[in-house]
Image (cartoon, rainbow, N blue to C red):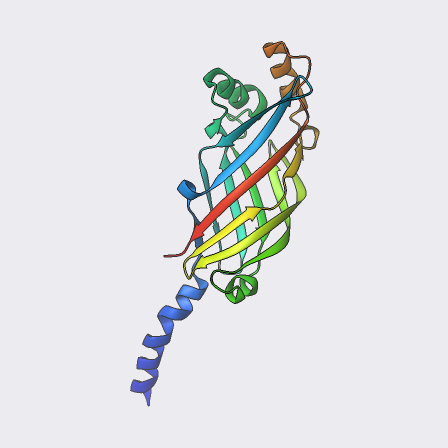
Length: 193
């Protein structure tokens, strides 16, 4: 009997471990972008080049945005945002966390997507705020999960103590205004190995 239980355990174990294994964020297939608005109506799209993260066995997702990887297509502006706005020497990362739920992930059929409103937390520049993340989740395959925003998440500079840095950027660039509110979109790809 013990022999049969051992064989059964060896057969079941890989499947149970796969179900509980963490999903790792694929940086090459993921993107977090935001739009800055200056002079009241001039909008420019920027993004971050380095993201890391995972979804653990309970369905808790965590995405880390490495703020020094900000890419605005203008090198001096990247440097100013890193040093003056984000102060990456003190606050190198922004972290988003939310619970997607293991049951939701496990029961999501392959090649099918569902809308999911996530209650999340954003840690940025020493501040932590609750945020709502309207998402669309697709299980592309057994080992690939795609999570995208279905509408922009509006981040306000004053909620994260970024107003002073924004004002300094405005002065340095000689701009009449830079918007405090920034729409953020994301496409996040997670894989399981």
